[in-house]
Image (tube, rainbow, N blue to C red; front, top):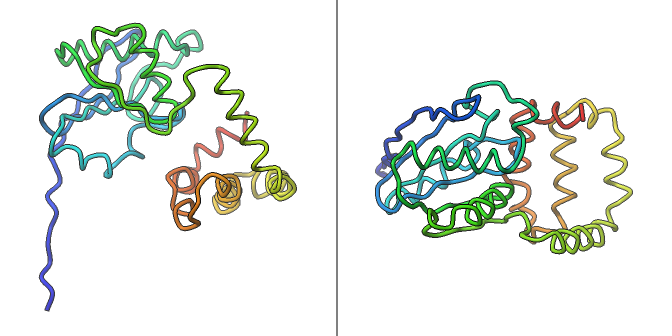
Length: 217
């Protein structure tokens, strides 16, 4: 007879940080070196990083937050506030609110772009920087990545075009959208089982609001 085990999840602390024209939701867990976790997107919020990232809470104080207009953050998202300087000011406001002299910043995807800009503008406030699958640091690198990506997906161009032009894709059918991204990322992720379960596909399948936002644009 197998014994059942229960994994104790760390207790999280939540709050709101007042910033310019908004309030940012934040969630912190663990003790130790403070790490501000900057989510990707920018259409996403911090929740897709859970519960996996919480494993670091045994050794670090993890501070997640939802960027303005995302997740549980509150306030009107004005067009004039959608600029990198405002995102940097928001991150600085979070650090100040928590009374932290310096922090490590961990940026995933788009969040890496925010982390790099923050480190450039506030180098005295950044103790460490971790970049995960991040946006390129330079425009030249962006062009190289785009060229390589187009070269690799050229073999799937007809299939991607057919999927994207289908009624199912245009109306945000989760399975069709998931299949589109399976094909798209099959040239990037080596093992099929890994990209079938990737967070991108899971997010598009489980959060149809994001699909609606994409098809409207």
